[in-house]
Length: 113
Length: 113
Image 1 (cartoon, each protein chain N blue to C red):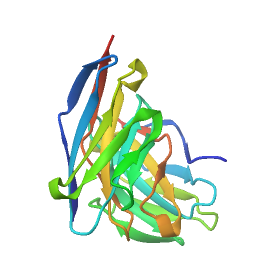
Image 2 (image 1 turned 135 degrees about the vertical axis):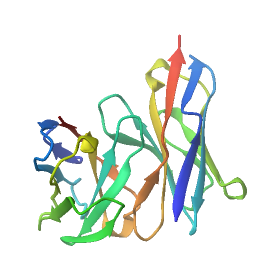
Image 3 (image 1 turned 135 degrees about the horizontal axis):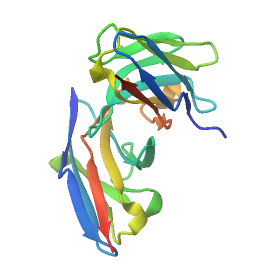
Image 4 (image 1 turned 120 degrees about the vertical axis):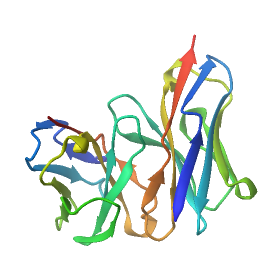
């Protein structure tokens, strides 16, 4: 069984401030972890993925995430927020064999000018 | 390189009707998964197709069925539509040995009235 909890359904930051979106997971097998971004009325775009290599993962648009097994966390960060980062962000976990992804409920990021 | 495509973009149906949604996977991909994303929620796994067979299924009733064709494209069929079936339906494709790494299409917005 696998599950994802995203802490904070809404996060608001000022332009240029640090972005931190929290994700905790539960998995009975070593997980593969993902962050996706979804803009209004669009599908999901993969930001980054953890697949058991380096624990610090760099993605597109300046985002990165760190896998912490002891904390079962995979938080998403970006040093400096841009207005174009405003969107819905989803954390997801997949097991290695079946590929079924389980998603969190999402975090809406608002960026204030 | 064409990504995942879905048709139609939007669809309005009446309760009790049947609907078919279509998906073409990313070039080179052989596995297709379908997800339902209700408003304000994360995507929920419906089922996955590989080699024209349903390989995995989520907690969805038998009203939801699918098919995969020899060219790897896929259809999602929903019978006896309910108001609660209104959602964004997402298709994701992946390659057999990296089935956990999925690429999503833009989705089909289904509205049931």
